[in-house]
Length: 335
View 1: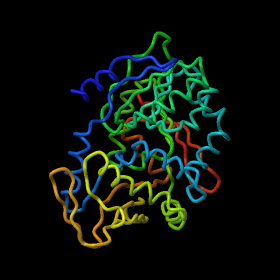
View 2: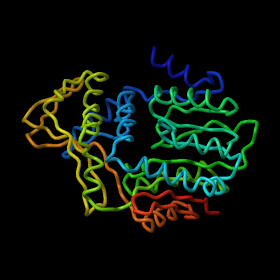
View 3: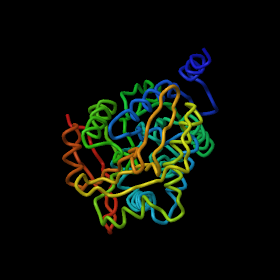
View 4: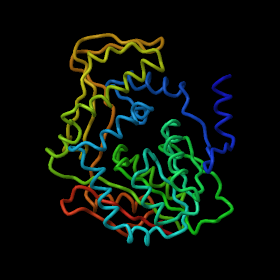
């Protein structure tokens, strides 16, 4: 009953200053079902979206500030360098929809210069969304914010457009998060986004590029162990929320570049033969057996533009840094 009341509370429009909140939190039942299903597979796996609870989101923000982790600072530099062109591409007074809003650091620049008719951040973590949206409301008191608690990897109903009609909808998906999806999943996500922005809509998406595997290895195996803590927090979350009994000392973070598939893979390796309980289910691990927790697919510019075209977008603009580390794509909806 409490969960239903909480979902109803979020589903109703609630005002927090200049912010409206929509949607409902991701239920524990779905989390449990996904964990049981994933750990029952021959190659044990867990959906990467569950990495981002409040603690996971905090750790990821730390990752973004690490010396080895180039995507955030490279994309930020690209956005600053080409801000005028990006604003011209998106168009002032658009409705800006951001998937996985996080701290919204890069978004602040877009909001300041675009002055969108409305900003719609979508985030799976209610706590992270409320914090980010509240900060933005204080910084931009004129901004209409419609914050959505939801899983953007699945079909998502966005709030209806407000009274101040936007010239068009522009989806913003920074941070190379699209790389967490397989190419087929990414195409499906782009198709869903194409339907949401409509025939006159557009998309700005950050895409990590293929590069020296040594650079990739350092980015996902930082010296301070923050990425390891981020990965292991998924097991801690299962313990906290689902009554699991994972001993985190018996697992180790492992990340490597799979060149044949063009992706970095993150795993948690069992250091010993052991049994683990989650709810009423028990799972056996052999020493060296892994839980696959995340992929981060890398693309060439041409590969990603072909993928976008298959989903109904035309690659109108692309901005890359001089070292060829990262790309920001401006996509327009095909008629």
